[in-house]
Image (tube, rainbow, N blue to C red; front, side, top):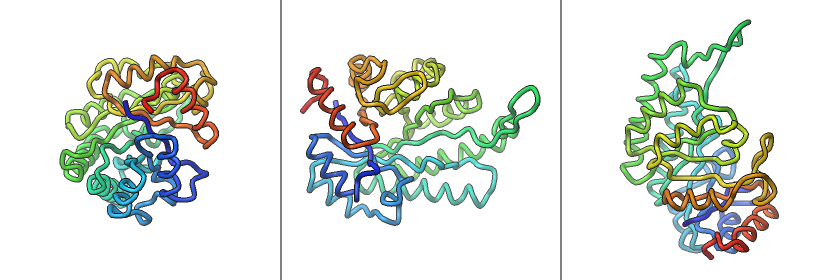
Length: 263
């Protein structure tokens, strides 16, 4: 099984992150494109490939966390679609196996007796935008990169799972399981992963409690060994998604001491 680390706020550069990943004998580094240092204008396929060869780690992308490729505004949507196309193309050219994506619920209106989501209210236009996004991802990935949709701390709405189903009709898409988000969301999306057991390609691994995510391994309530086994059985890679270098080091040590770490 392959383990990786996220790009940390402490990392001074992508090379600095790769150096740390190599020191910890990790397999890959997930570059979060919300960080300015990991923006498209600061990376090239040649530079990323050189770093992979130098440090013996590969990269994955976490697409911009505010990415909204299905928004109704034509001009805003076009900007996000361009970002997605260029990011996935760069991933392909740099031999990355996966990019990670949050599937946003979009804008909603709070009414006296319920919440009305605009993606649900204007369903036809929303689904057309979903299909356009799917087509762009297929074109950019060329069968070499998988776009993995990640659960969040709030359970998916029905219009979200319905459209993720549309994405999963394409082999260009898979699923990311964030185990801490799952805990905080009360396991309300578990049914969706059970429905698609063969589509789990990526995991964000950290410890958690009902109201707290991204804890060092062993500091929360999750059965880490069981989660590692689940990822391994699915042939999924796992990002040890911890927020500080000290917590990352302690989490790697936790895995090693329990025979869960390959290195």
